Length: 161
Image (cartoon, rainbow, N blue to C red; front, side, top):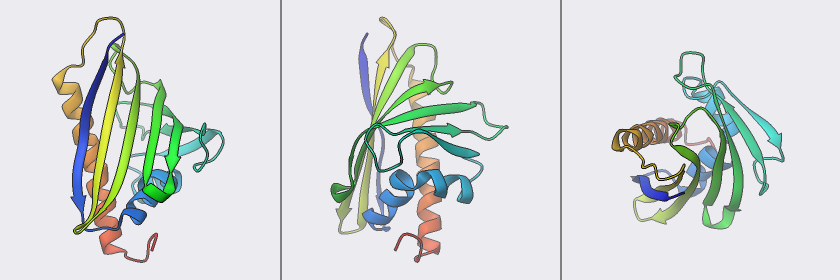
């Protein structure tokens, strides 16, 4: 099994790192379905809670989405450094060639506000490789969600202030 690593996002945002981290990592189970139901219909805790290593969240996608759900397990969380590492352990979001994926999200304070870097480590089945179009779809999806969250936080400065 090979591992393919790629950067899904490297974005600079005017929003504070603490607010982005809260919206996208800590409280995403509340924030995303309520604010952006087009991205997630609901989020259920299978184990633990959003601030606990080992927590497993099941994200249910809207009926019109091409996927039904994904389960993510929190592997590492460092709220002081705005870092989250999690593994997608189940779901229909990957092509048949992917066994599982590990994601690392880092929100760094910058002069502009925040630099957000999201890296994926795709663990492939056998000798398979990740298709460029699958990586591009993942990048587009991540960046679409990020921009929507960013716009909402800019327009609503009291949220996660």
